[in-house]
Amino acid sequence: MNDAVIVSAVRTAAGKAAVRTAAGKAPSGTLRGTRPDELAASAIGEALRRAPGIEPAEIDDVILGCAMPEAEQGMNVARIASLRAGIPVEASAVTVNRFCSSGLQAIAYAAERVMCGFASAIVAGGTESMSLVPMGGHKIAPNPTLMERYPDVYLSTGLVAENHARESGISREEQDAFALRSHQRALAAIDGGRFADEIVPVIARFVNGSTRGQTPFSPFDGKKGSDPVSEITFAIDEGPRRDTSADALAKLRPAFHAAGTVTAGNSSQTSDGAAAVGGPDARSDRSDRAQRSLRRPGARVPESPADRSRSAQRQRRRHRARASAWLHRRQTDDDAPL
Image (cartoon, rainbow, N blue to C red):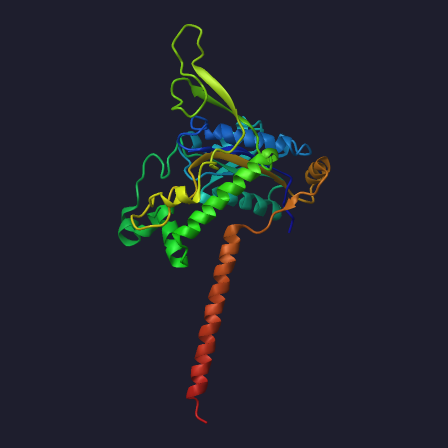
């Protein structure tokens, strides 16, 4: 079996609503009006630029994850983004959905295709605008039979988190402490420039007068010669908060259950952003060229989170089967005549 390697990885910054764009905060962040296909195109293009041994024409496939693939991130957003990034039309592209782990699953699929010899070079990643496409999409239409027989399939992520916290005995105080430490570490990483190399800056555009106080731009005054559109280069994650504290987190109300422990402060924010990685076959000529140009070896791709989860489930089933067999033997031995 072939080895798959990652020779470049970038992201946008995360906007409020991994190369990766910086992550924007939805729905009031800097990227709230930026199309997710354009964010993905920026990440894909930069991932290819950082792997100069690989040409866009050599890409066999583009695989992107998207949790809510509709509207601006619909119509096979991987295909749209790949074309916008300059990958030739001859390359195929596919969008996959595993909700929150869609991007990770896309990378796992890409690695598996390379490992099995079905492709030599693939770009994979994810894109999402939670500002333009809300959780659940624009039209939620649950299956009536499942709603009657197994409604838990439609539980929100927040309620699932509540269930996990209750089952694992994780207190509100522990969640808040973890969240505060996460903010502090993220801010320290930003201040230390630890994220700078992985982020590709993107241009965010605003219609002046509709910025809701979230940007430094002045409203469009309607005077002749005034520019109704402003631009900003976005390259720093918006999520980490410098003004948060243990006391501030403790004062927040539960966000998903009246008697719950998960709040807006100790759960992940809604974000806008995109990320992409370039992954060729480790033995291919294009991998050699890319790794020589980078002067370092590419990162080997381990088994996917889903593979590890399935492996753990199989291990638990084996343990239960052994315990049952052991108990059966003991009972049989105890009942046997002397």
